[in-house]
Image (cartoon, rainbow, N blue to C red; front, side):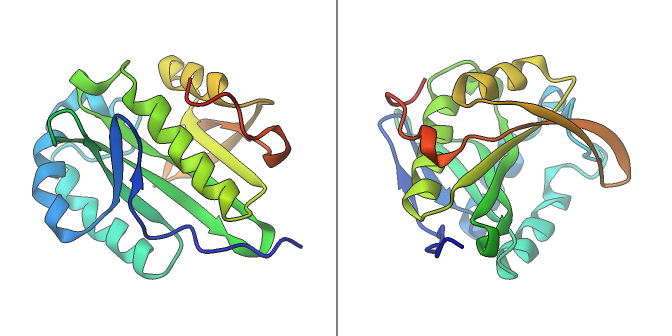
Length: 184
């Protein structure tokens, strides 16, 4: 059994982004950034209630230590451009998932997501976690491609999330393949 260190909460700094542990000071910026309905195509989110309805759940999960959610700050202009999370934190098994990631349209396809994933992976492996899984909806080809460029091998399984049956692609980077040559 690996003895792991806490994953945070702490701010993770890169060249393009800072991943700031979710705090109340981020809520208004995240709600504003989350207004584009296209962001939520693959998320089980009730668009009538909006992202604001999800924030209490994230706060609750962080308080119980099951999740660490981050506000993603673009360093070029200081804007909050999305969110990403450590989920299903399982210290006993030295395992954690990365998911619940979304970005405003202007941040998608940029250096922001690869660097954010790199920071999360580096932090997890530095904390002695030896298995990190990316979770994404199997219909989200763009997200699956981003995960595949970050890690191998891949396996598929089904999960029921928020009452919605979704096929999930789990992409587990293993610590023995770390570090790569930096963010993709």
